Image (cartoon, rainbow, N blue to C red; front, side, top):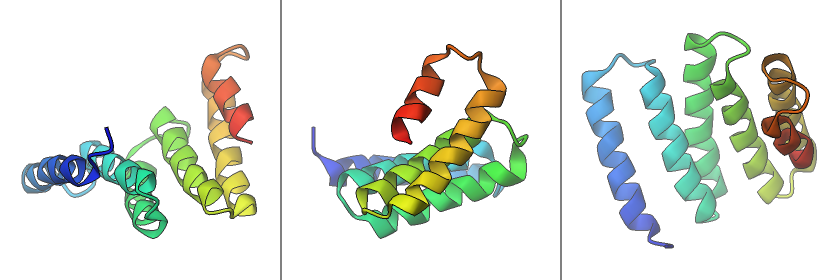
Length: 120
């Protein structure tokens, strides 16, 4: 709906609650960071989007197995921002990391693989 400030307000409230009630590397915090990053990306505030997506990735890397699909999502999110910024080699690097995870966790005809190939 384009109500970015309203969306940010709600996502920030969720993040605040999670920060008060969960350990600092809890996957739900990564989810909040991804949500906030998505809003900033939609607002074309790419440096802010990257900052939040990178926080999510950091948590995912610390708490999840190396082939977890949430890691693939984080890599795709960061790749998307770099793509939107026109930094295609950086985007490609992150998209390839996502594809590698998707190839290990999905059958060869899974739609998520199609999405990863499309991104690349």
